[in-house]
Image (cartoon, rainbow, N blue to C red):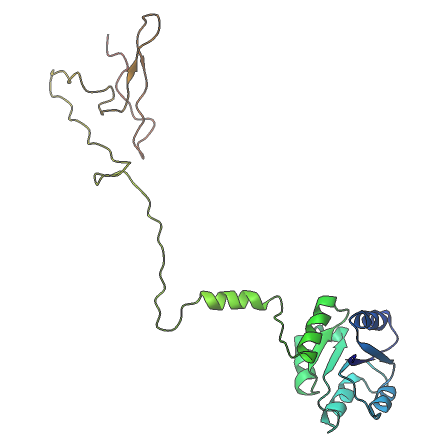
Length: 230
């Protein structure tokens, strides 16, 4: 059996579009243009499953009409959605719920996704989260429970030191004092493995690669001459 929905609103394009949308959802829709028309229909034997009520419905407006319906013993169980452009104000929405007893508020024009959410919540009893709720739930789930310690992973930056590892550097050899010559095994630049001589095809002077300065060293610092003094 189809569920009945009443739309009490002035004859507007929005009312027509809302009625067509509800009919496509297999609801039985009845339209009313004034408050007296709606009240007369409510006096009938069958009550609707839901009422969409515009706050500017003539002649008294939808606010007072909503409260009158919700305070009646036979109609108080009927869900009522107050709708209108003025309900964009959060203050007016709170007033519509607490003072005039509306079950839901709807700002017009309304996206179809919002209408579907209201239908599921009021007719099926399923509370559907709004787009802003998942973010709150995500933040709440990220918070540690009371008495629980949060584990924080700190990234470890590898550095060059004497404790081993792939970036280990050997300490530089001491420079000879006076006129002593450096050992032949020492590589140019004063640090083992810092530079190397490669043979040049054709028998010319060997090409010497400049040593890479250690991290943090100034590029302007003078280094040893490639070929020595002449």
